[in-house]
Length: 171
Picture 1 (tube, rainbow, N blue to C red):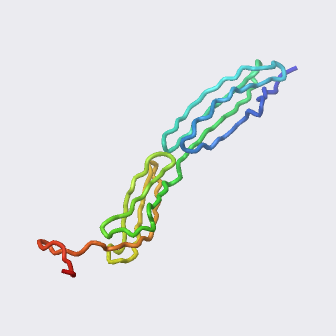
Picture 2: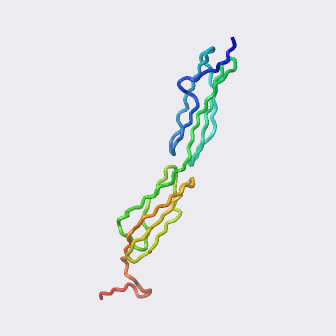
Picture 3: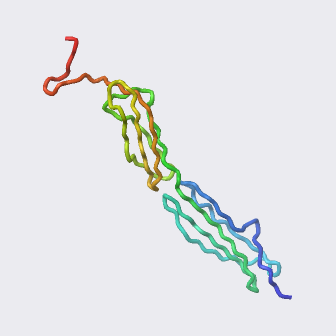
């Protein structure tokens, strides 16, 4: 009788791919077990390669179990992470009128690392009117997000002429 049947994995161990999110730890490596119809329990060999950085990556765990006649079964566990989520912008105090010389406060949050403000612009700088403030942020992985918020601007500063100080129309 010739053995041509490879071992089988126990506990539904076969090939698996797992997508991870930023900040997730690499799961604990399982202990694979394989049985052979002729040899019973067989040894399992494994290797791992790959790496993650803050923007993503992939790690492979490859396993092989062979019986004494050279019939083998293989499995691969793949763990992937890829940061494709842009940072989020939150405008602070959107109901409070702002002075015409200021930009509003914002907070920027990114799931996978740091994000920096690339630009902050506005239209209609003064004169008691609404203005649109547009902010663009980019995270360390190149994901960008732009958000626009409408504000009421209030010009509460009296005009002055250089050298004369403030003008007061009510002496």
